[in-house]
View (cartoon, helix red, strand yellow):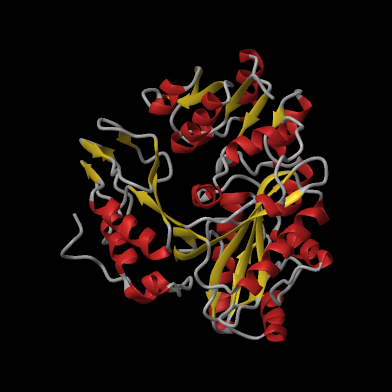
Length: 452
């Protein structure tokens, strides 16, 4: 096992990793921008180093500077968290070249799964179901419209290198496709440096369900059940839960088997997530693979009793998994909501100073955040300020607990999406367990009377 690791991230995920390091008696090295100098995660780390100014391209995306700090501090490995450099194949490659262990899969696998077009081809070879679509890059509106004629509308126009819904759009006609193509291609080039676009058939009443896997360097791959992530806004997850209340046990077994097959086919190691779209008849199709820890990993931890960061560290240090698929029992139900600093009426970010901050407590309640009263929420970073998780013996109990906890979550000084989250977890459609990725568009109304 490692004696010291550097965490190439910030905020709640950096703090989450630090706490596991403390549990395992591993020294942690934090890096921070000038804007994060007073952050809780910086104080909790064994060591901390400033790496630049607030903008991410002048701090958290400076791969060479982060590697320099790791080397000079004596860290043996780097945990990238999620976002930022976590799925950057060049960063993983540089770590390896400098004799540092990248806590994640190989640079080659990151690169292959980073291209959605290549990932589709690979999964088809592995025998994993994929959505009908085009497996080549579309360079022009003319190519796109010709391909669309073969597949049929409605279609999803997607950026091959995309993520977080950037460069992705639902189109219902040739006119919409032509109008959307150039703009989404430009956005993909701007955000990812890659404007490759492709098309997939749109799945009606889509459910977004993902399978968490762990894989070691000794050929062992195990699934850790699934997560329901269908409640989304602009293709970004807002509420996640485990297990899925929608799929049957037969579908569940097939999905877990498909995820294991996919991971073994590409020789995957460490923690990863195979994401699927599931239609109303429970047919499932490969969507993408995330080659990192997910924001929503706590719900899996809550129903399995496993520490996924601990498992990541063990695998990265060369250990074989000490658990087998049959050892991973499923207990109860867990729901996670993401707390954002944003206006619940407009969804615009709401930066500012937090004047009052009190976290909810109680049986089955878990908080993941790295802020406190006096913290400054800046416009430099993602507006997510924390995650709230509730576990219960049943889904109904977890729903009750998450609603009560949200009602007791006290933040003043900024606006948050908490009123919208309360409305979501209280809605009869959510409580029924049948939510599609269209849930918020169909059921959410601006909270003129409750938004603060």
